[in-house]
Image 1 (cartoon, rainbow, N blue to C red):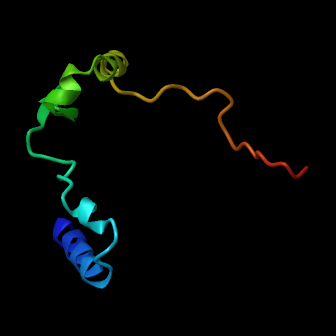
Image 2: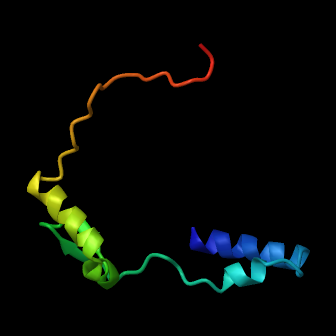
Image 3: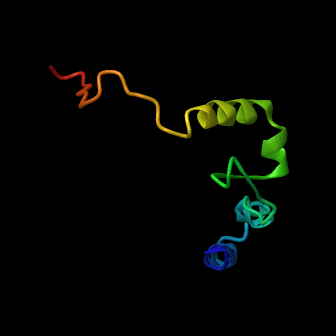
Length: 84
């Protein structure tokens, strides 16, 4: 997938050399292989996420309920529209 994106960016760079595409080509990939399994392997986290107090607090609350989804009040279909 990354190879396809790089190829497309190279093609755009040839066709439109004056554009900002050159900046995008130098961005590092978002995903890396430095992920640590946490919460019995249910969550993969990098070091940055492990140090973020908001992420840790959210994951701790989710772990308390065994990562089950929260109940939805008034479940069903809500038709929200300006046309009545």
